[in-house]
Length: 136
Image (cartoon, rainbow, N blue to C red):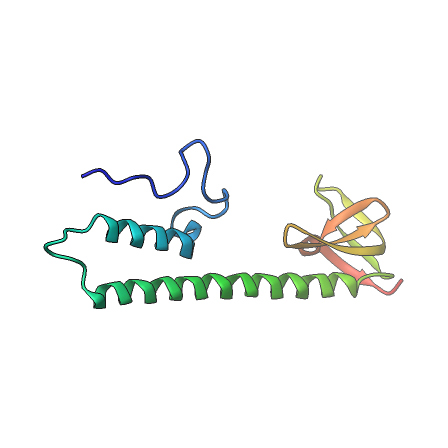
């Protein structure tokens, strides 16, 4: 018996490149699999209620774990931004993306792609690459 596709075609990925394998699954994916399973089940031996409830419980646990992970990333990003903001007006030394050592007074703090940076003049230094901080 043929089962239709659950999600997008191979040319249009369902999840982003950073979320592959099990990390890319969402509750929507599990719900689609559950519906497909119910749609194509053997009518003489249907799936039991306990199994369906177990699967729904697993979906809820997965969704909760994803939401918790996202919340933790947000908290970490906010903490990093707060730390970067505390460097404003202070003399910082660190390496930029071109691996050049930059020293100067931090003028601003920014968050890009979940990572905190401090800006010295027009150069941005990743917070993790700051090697020293001194009073302005």
